[in-house]
Length: 177
Image 1 (cartoon, rainbow, N blue to C red):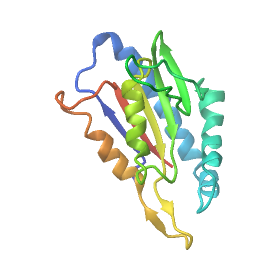
Image 2 (tube, one colour):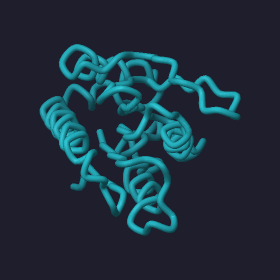
Image 3 (tube, rainbow, N blue to C red):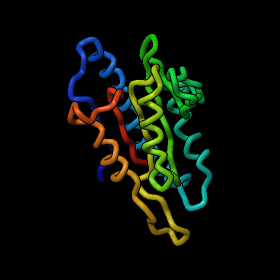
Image 4 (cartoon, one colour):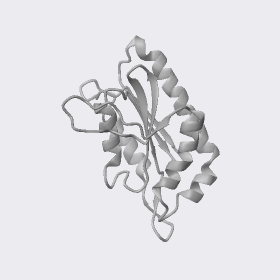
């Protein structure tokens, strides 16, 4: 089962290859964490569970082991009235970084995935996006009601792969839990 999708701009400036390698290393550690804690995540990700339970699970890795900060207010983009505050932020250098968002029920039904990509696009200090989404969301009877990972992977992929439609995000990584 596919649990990870990586989307990267078609052209990476040479000065940013080391940054992208660092981001890819962080992504690999997150993938390993998801894989090794799959049973624990399954106990948290049930019908009617609070989103904070899932976010708390990932906070332990992102903040304590990888060095992300929680609920950081990003620098506002000139001309936009926004105080973007991602779930997690990791500074890769001066004025550059990764935002990480943990989604659950409204991933696609409320377009949270596209809002998160927009947040990364307009924030001057965010250049990479980690989007952690469910493989399935559940109905009360235990059957899946939607499968966000594949839809999110496809939707975000539309903004990469062709210079004409690429946005100002160097990479987007979608993780399924």
